[in-house]
Image (cartoon, rainbow, N blue to C red; front, side, top):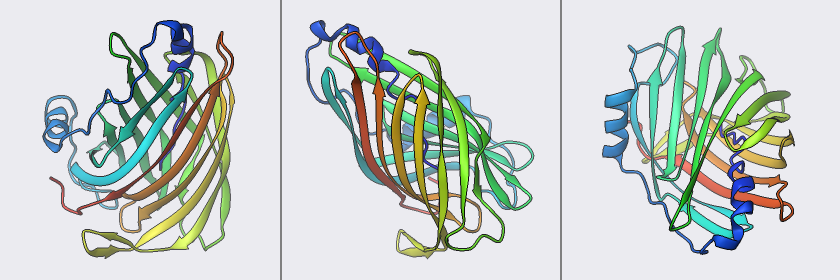
Length: 261
């Protein structure tokens, strides 16, 4: 599931530096499959195959997106290629990480609990490159109640999800909560193959250290919970010495191949 916490935490730092910034676009590029393979091979243990969860490996996604700051004005692109890694843990748990660019990745930790897919939390990394300096921000979140797929659910079923995040560049926690609605079954075309999927609509409100909204459309494979497609719109506001700073993100990604690279 696509969920962004505190990705705009870096804005508080940037706001204090605005008079020194040379404004420009760029600073990031797509991550290659070979780079994702190298990271997995060198740093991430891969468990044995587990029934009901995706196979471990590096998967190729295609997509596009844009991230933007309004103060100082700055933007960077996502995609068009986005490698993602699946790493397996014990007890039916696994981590899904997707690299939108060299300056932005996100991971989610899922577990299969008696037929339900549950999100336990994850991390987001974002880097903004201003030419003569860069600012990195890492956000970590945990979910108290974030069931993604429920056994026996029917179209229109709706329930609440709640998570809390902290960021290296923002003081205090930010809550993220809102309704999650099962739209119904809807196949996703993956490299010419229709894959049975569950489609969901999510709406989130951020509160606490930061405020904002997040709206998503998400498709998960019926067989193993693999994220197949994601569409999102995010807006996060942060207080700063020069007033409210706003981060916006729009984007989408779709699995391009069922076979790991």
